[in-house]
Structure formats: structure tokens, C-alpha cells
Length: 309
Image (tube, rainbow, N blue to C red):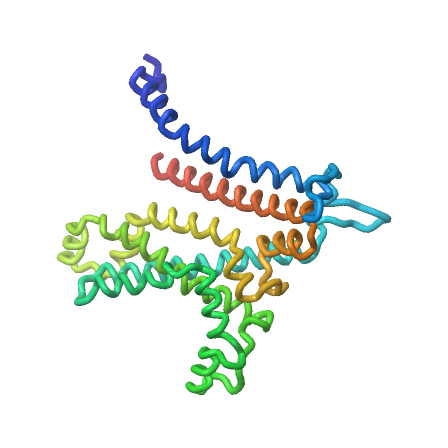
């Protein structure tokens, strides 16, 4: 038999696997494929919320068009590219902080100490709160007139006057990132903690007997062993951060300083009543996320091949 040729047993297992996932694929086609296809189609029309059924095909004009020597469309809108930049800044910063803090929290929760179960449950509370609820809660706490954050900072003498956390261009992005880190770090910690619980303890006992420093053990032993779980957590968080909407919109609404791609698409669709340009922006968001997922998965496969060779 040629190398790589599938055996009858292997072919049967493949057929069984397809039979098992077929219902899920059909559900996804009904739930996701039709809305996605409809959104892509509307992006090539002049549809509006007032009369989406009377939309006419206009080609790429919602993306790029030139009239009278002036360019129009989402791809030439400075606010679109600013929203792309805001999304990338938010994603890179928040995911990086959540990864580092999540690993640190998981390492602490992995240790044995009295009341560990209660601490683990308390750590998960921010993640369990719905995003809209936590965002509204932080909006009140960050209010420049009666928010407790400014009151606490003034009480400690760190600031002389209240700060407009959700109105200042720089502070608003810091506030959005901070709230997201507060909410989502438990998610990262939970996945890393699950990986830590699966590690064999004899490795650490041997390292302790040999007198190896705990920091060196972490970078040489723990981190390589939990890397698969950490990569999965980073992938999930990255894709989720790229499409962030509710947190940013509740805290800062349509502020250009924090507007993300999803908030931009919502503004085009709802505020400007343009289903065509809003759908075009939503399609671009989908393409950006799909490209990011493809790049991450490709990088992971290349790394596995290098490790296996």
C-alpha cells in the first residue's frame, strides 16, 4: 500500500465524522450563511433602511467611487481608516495585557492556599457580568462629575481636578482598554489555569530537587507546556477584540477617538440610514477578521511543522 493511502477504516471514520458534523453545518448555513450573503449583496446596492427592498445594484460604489474628480466610499473615508487603527490599537493592547495578567492570575490561583475556591469564584465575576452591564457600570464610575474613580484619585492626591475619562481623546481609549482588560482577564486566566492543572507535578518536583530557580522553570518548562492552551486563548480574544462593539459604544458612543470598525458600520447603517454603505463596512469587518484568523492558523501550522521537523 502506498504511503499516505487511506485505509477502509480511515475512510469510514471520515464518513462518520462528516455525518456527525453535517447537522451543525446545515444549522450554520441557515443561521450564518444567509445573513452574511445578504450583507455582502447589500454592500453592492444603494439600499437604505427606508426601502431596502427597492435597492438597485451599483457595483463597488459603496467601497470606492469617483464623481466629479472626488472620491467617495468606505475605503476613502478617513474615519474608516481611523476606526481600523483604533481597532488594531485596542486589540493589540488589550489582548497583550490580558494575556500577561491572565497568566499571572492563573499562576497565583494554581497555588494551594486557604480559601482558594472562593478566590477562584470571585475572579470570574467580572467575566460573568454581561458586557453592556459592566460597560454601563464603568461609565458611571468614570463620570467626570460624580464618578467614584475621580473621587478616589483625588482622595489619594493623584489628580487635582476630575478627568473626563470618556470624553478626552487619549483617556477614552485608555478607559475602554482598561474596562476590557478588567472584564476579560478572567477568561484568559481560566483557560491558562485549566492548562496548568493538567501539567505533571513530577517535573516540578524534579526541578525543585535540582534547585532550579522558579522563574527559569516557568520559562523553560511551564510556558512551553501551556503554549497550546495559551495560543487558543489568544486566538479567541484577538478575533473577539477585532469585532468589539458593545463595550466601546456604551462607554463612548460614536466618539472618533475610540470608534472601532463595528461601531463605524453601525453608524453608517443606523445613524446615516444607509444599508448599502453600512453593509459594505460590515463586509470589510468580516474580511479583516477572516484574514486575521487565516494568518493566525497559518502561523500555528508553520510552527507545528517546524517543531515536528
